[in-house]
Image (cartoon, rainbow, N blue to C red; front, side, top):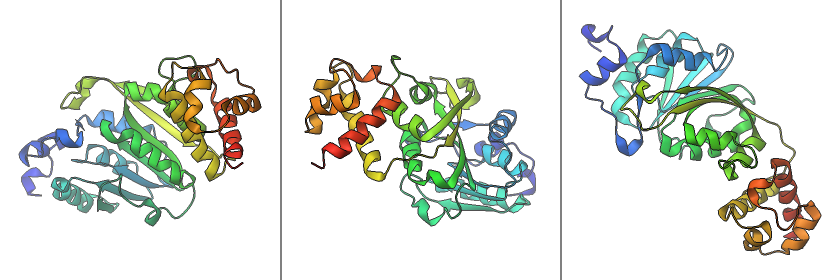
Length: 282
């Protein structure tokens, strides 16, 4: 970084270095440092945690994380165009940033996570990979203290939805079963460059301890996929693709055959998954 560039804002550095957002990667930058500071404050104290930022881009959120002095700081960035900006930022920082150039969706986090509950994840996620990444982190949730993530508002509503709400679905059931979720605030499209057509929502997600084994979690995925795949149908019809005796499954779970997926509370879906796990082994 040249002496002339040292005191430039992230927005100015992005323009000078021709680092314009790529639509194919779902990139939307936040240049307002007050906003990125607010996002990072929402993650709570960082001093005792290993912090991971997914998709730092030009480094706006990265700068705010540095100010909170994390125990260790690692970023994962797919776009190599940002290498110089991020490496210059690391050199300027009192806390060295470890930068991994990789696609977070394909990255093997088992190489990274070591100590349970010692990691915090903070990210302005591209809309097109936000849910796949969140589902990926289910596998590693025992290592994570919290996730502070930006989602498209419609996706956040699906995550937060309760039964008998049009947004309630498979995502609601699986994510709420695994996380306690706190809605923090909405962000106007004007805060991003380029400006998206929709609002974003910041969520904190805190992993829950669950007593369900791997097979039962797989069954929950299969049951919710079948049930919400045809959400307007009664469960006696929508669950047929599970290829077991559906009447027996519903009877054991004490669910009426005429009920629909959108009416079933999360706890009942968990019972369905447990009973399906037993019945499919017969």
